Image (cartoon, rainbow, N blue to C red; front, side):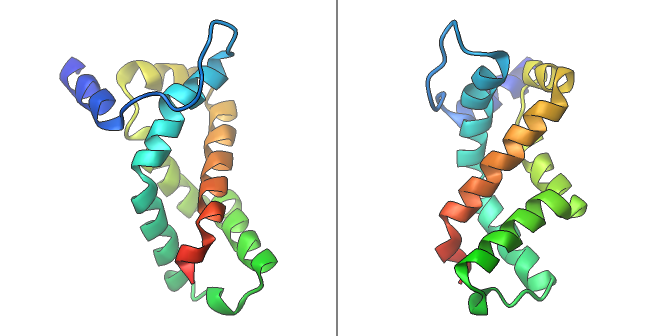
Length: 129
């Protein structure tokens, strides 16, 4: 398993954001694990959301900015199948130790993960038109 973990860490790259001795476990996990994975998987998130729009026949281009943002919120927060797929894209790049940390506090980490994903999609909303 160590070989996989080493490969995953090299693939993801450096920590994004600061981590100090005063950082909470969740904040450290966010900056050391979640941010690098979200950055690495960005193209996959974009492709998945584009597919989601097409599959669900959402006329995204004709919507107002507010309505587009709401579509993103609803897709990630309320569409369980889509949300679970997005979580899988992220969790699949955890090391064994990171998964153990995640499993101890999955509820709070899931909230952070999905919130960060929503903000990432919203910040690139122009790609979906």
